[in-house]
Length: 78
Image (cartoon, rainbow, N blue to C red; front, side, top):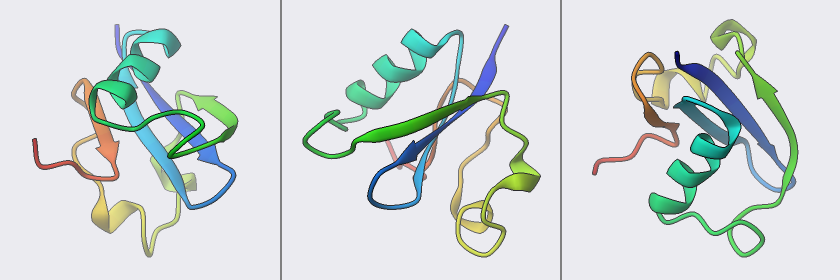
């Protein structure tokens, strides 16, 4: 079963990931090239985030599909 995670970052908007678990979500971020501590410092993680609660002017128009496993914000062209 997949869950949508929203990682709030100390600087910047944050990261959206759909994954099997929190550990899986963190692995997807690092495998996409994001290095915790160097690139981002997480202040909060929201599991099963409701997309309607995210920034409708920046995040939603610029995100990938949140219903498949992977990083959906920022949208990655891998």
